[in-house]
Amino acid sequence: MWLQARRAMSVSSLRATTRVPRTRRVPKAVLTVTPAAAKHAKDLLAQHGSNAVGLLVDIRKRGCSGNAFHLDYAEQIKPGDEVVEVDGIKVVVASRAIMQVLHSTMDYDESDIAEGFVFENPQATATCGCGESFT
Image (cartoon, rainbow, N blue to C red; front, side, top):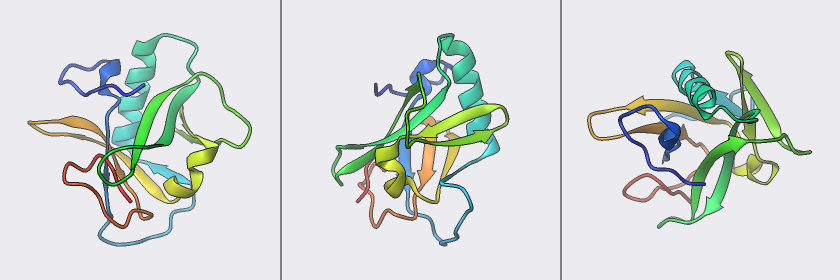
């Protein structure tokens, strides 16, 4: 389920954009989650109030450049999914998205015009103008 970001903290803050990193470094985990992203994910999970075990990161075919990060609540951890635990929360990377997410960094950014999760993805060779999709 794709939800647009709003200034008020709510489940609608599940928004993701993609950046191509300036330097390429190889982290140890499938996905690196910054403290800002972990804090916001923890707040979202607390507000959600369901049986979610964590935040799900997936890739969907869409946008100008072909692929886009998709965020949702993980109701279960499926075989083959990768789990990154940070500050007491679980970020679940869907098994089908691992190769495209590999070595990415998940951050949370707030500005005057937008807020949402931002992924720096070393697998991306280009992004669209708005940053929501990548190739």
